[in-house]
Image 1 (cartoon, one colour):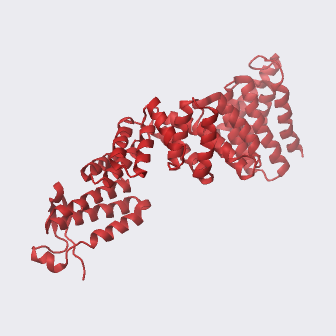
Image 2 (cartoon, rainbow, N blue to C red):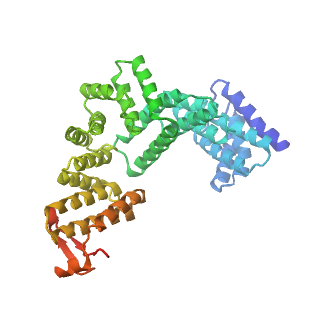
Image 3 (cartoon, one colour):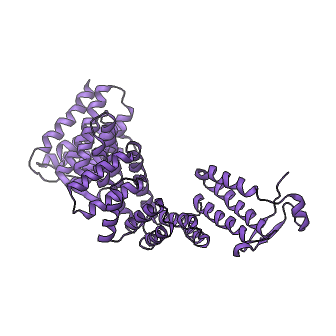
Length: 439
C-alpha cells in the first residue's frame, strides 16, 4: 500500500507542478537546489546501472523539486516507469504507474515544449499501456500529427492510424474516417520517402508505409473507396493536391474500374503531370486493352520518377504492358532496370523469361530449344529468390519444359542432358544447360 501511495503521489506531484508558474532550473529555494542536485545524481547513477527500481525514488524527488532541471529526466523517467510496469502484477499499481507515465509526457511539454513530438510519444505509450482506450490515444496522436504534419515521426504516423483502426474494430470509427485519415497519414509518409534519406531511415519509413497500407487495405473495398473518394472530391472540387492523393489510394488498391477514376486521373495529369498520374492513365488504358497507349504512359511514369520509392513498380508495370503488347525487347529492358534496384524481384525475372521464351518462335531447332532452356533458368531463379511468385514460376517452368526436345531429338544434334550451350536465339548471348523432355 505504501508503494501504491508513493506511485499515486507522483501523479499528484506532476499535476501540481504542471500548473505552477515557471521556477528556477534547480528549484525555488536553496534547499530545493541542494535536494535537486543530490537526487539527480542518485537517480542517474542507478539509471546507468539499469537499476530502475532504485532510480525511481530519487527520480520522483527530482520531478517534485525541480521539474525544469533536465529534459533528459523525462526521457529517463519514461524508461523507468515502463520497466516498473513490465514487472508489476498488481492492477491498481499498474494503473497508477500508467497514469504517471502519461503525465510525465505532459510535464515534459509544460517545461520544455516540443509539443508535437512529445504528444506523439505519449500517444504511442497510450496505445501500448492504455488498456485498449484507443479513442483517447487517437485524440492525442491526431493532435500530434496536426501540429507536426510531415515532420511527424514514422512511428507516430503509423501509431495514429493503428489507433484509428482499433477504433474502427470497436465500431467507434467509420470507413469514411479510415479513408480520409489514411489520405493524410500516407501523404506525410510518402513526403518523407521522397527525401534523401539514409538507408536505415528509409527502411523505417517503408515499414510505416506498409503497416498503414496493410490496415487500410484490410477494411477498404473498391466500392467503398470509390464512393468516399467521390464525396471528398465533390466537397473540394478544385483541390488538385487532394485528388492526387486520392489517386494514389485508388491505385494502391487497384480500384481503376471505379467511375471516378478516369476523369480524376485525366484532370490530375493535365494540371500537374506526375509519375502517379501517368501511371494512373497507363493502368486505365491497359484495362481497356490499349496496350500501346498504356505503354506510353508507363514509360512516362518511370521517367518522371527517377528516384521515387515507386520507381520499380512503374518499371515493372511498363515491362508487363510491353510484354502484353508483344514488345519483348522493351519488356526485358524494363525488367533489367527493376533488377538493378531489386535483384531478387521474381516478377522481373519472370518477365525476362517470358521475353526469351517468346523469341523461340523465330528460331529453328536446335536454337529455339536454347530459348526455352534459358527461359526455364529465369523462372527457376525467380522461384528460388522470390517465394511470392512460386506458383506463377511453376506454371511457366512447366510450359517451357513441355517444349524441351526429346532425348532422340537432342541426340540428333549432338546434345545430351547437362551439356552447357550458348543461346543465340533472339539475340540472347547467355549460357544454359541442355534438358530433354521425358517420354
